[in-house]
Every structure is written in C-alpha cells, then in structure tokens.
Image (cartoon, rainbow, N blue to C red; front, side, top):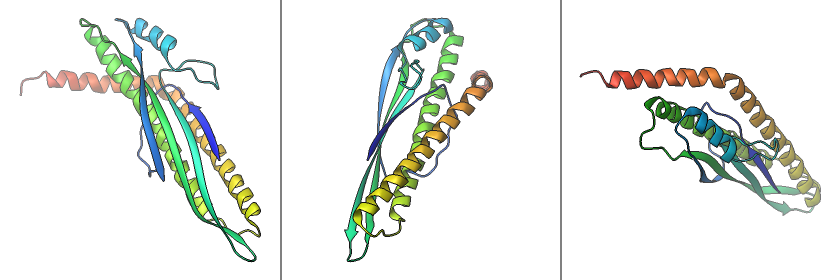
Amino acid sequence: MKRSLLCALMLALTALPAAAANLVKTYSYFSVGGRTLDDIEAQLSKNGPQVKSTGMRHPGATQMAFTTRVSYAQKSDSCRIVDAIVTLKVKVILPEWRRPRKADRDVRLFWDTLSADIKRHEERHVEIAKNHARALEDALKATYPQKTCDAAKAKAAEITAAMLAKHDRAQVQFDRVEGVNFESRILRLLRYRIERTESGRLPG
C-alpha cells in the first residue's frame, strides 16, 4: 500500500508532536536570485516547485510517500495482524538565495525572515504526516481478528485509506489557516527580528 502526496503552500508555524514509526527525510534546494524584494518574489514564482494539485509554483514544498508493511497470522478460524510498520518518506524542497555581495540590509532581513518561515511551514507539513503515520500504524496493530486473511487485508486497506484521507484533510486545513495568517505572521516576525537586531547594537 503506497501513496504519494505532494504538499505545499506558503509559509509557517511550527510544532513538535510525536515521531512516526519510520521517517526518511531529505532536503533539496532551488536557487533564487535578485537584489530587491520584487526580484526575489519573481524568482520564487519562476523557480519554485510546481504543485500538481494546483499547477502553480510555490516558495517551498514537501513530497511525501507513505508505505505500509503488514504481517498476518492465520489460525484455524481467524486471521489477525501481528505487526504493522509504516514508513514515511519525505523530500523537503526549499529556496536558497544567491545573495549579492552588496544586498540591502532590509532585503537581507526580509529574506532571513521569509526563508525561515518557509522552512517552518514545510517542517510542519512533515510533523502532520508523522502524526498520521504513527496513528495509522497504531490503528493497524489494534485491528480485531477477521475470519480470513483476505478479510484482514481488506480491513487493513480500509483503515489505511481512511487515515490517509484524514491526513490529506489535515494538510489542507493547515495550509488554509497559514494562508489567512501569513501577512500578520510575517509582520510580527519582522518586528521581532528588527528589535533583536537593534538591541544587539546597543553597548553592553
């Protein structure tokens, strides 16, 4: 049972829930050039990963694949799941700015804020997937015995489909909330970074 999901959207909160049974995570980067904010925005729109579900390019993305391996035990009158291992493979795609030597300080500050937010957003997608991978594994292991192994396999497929559908809804809901809160969150992060920068210049 394998299913791929390409999740992406604009930018981020973070949380650190429980880990999945097995997680394989890699990173990939695409280049962004430009000296001004308009240049960077144009580069993100041009070079960002394209999401199949929308056909649009985004400033970051996370490719995901869930794979389940289930073991069954047949008895005279029943068949049960004796073990279930869920593996989550993710590839996080992030932008990397080819910063000019004389880039304006305000542009650098905004990029640092924006790129950190993009990374947090994609890491949160991974956390959501990890939670559902763990929940899927637990649900499979807790399945009651069925009359036959064919019935047990059908039950495992039903549980997997339901959990992945729940996962997809959670990812969409996260992106929806992120999209609404993006502007206010970036402004808040910028104010925080500016305050830290200015306070760092004061004599000790």
